[in-house]
Amino acid sequence: MNWTQFDEQMMREAIAEANAATAHQDVPIGAVVALAGEIIGRGRNERELLQDPTAHAELIALRQAAESIGTWRVLDATLYVTLEPCSMCAGGIVLSRIPRVVYGAADPKAGACGSVLDVTGEPRFNHRPIVEGGLLAEECGELLRQFFVARR
Image (cartoon, rainbow, N blue to C red; front, side):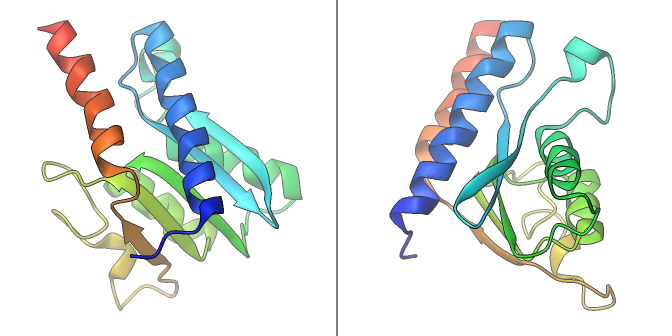
């Protein structure tokens, strides 16, 4: 995959969000939504902080992006996330109509962008974003490994 410098910069922003999640003992997953070269949404896992099972980085970033542009259709944007989205987040991605998703590490246990399920590629849905995985995958995966090693 030929990643652009902008893609790498945005994934580094998502990694910064993931690192911030550990301040409240949340799993370090971060996301940003970029549109026209600007970040319009940021999110980090906040399930522990908010005691909300839906407080995933991707959904928080998508909510913020939609608020920023004034519509739930997050068109012409890209979502960058450090871990392959789960089925809930993949559903939110499809429903938001975001056209492109870039993730870091694959999730062989719960990934829904091709690893376990392929929600974003389901041909019966009316929207299928382009999904590209593996950007800074080692760095993104290492955040998770370090987090879980410290918790054991």
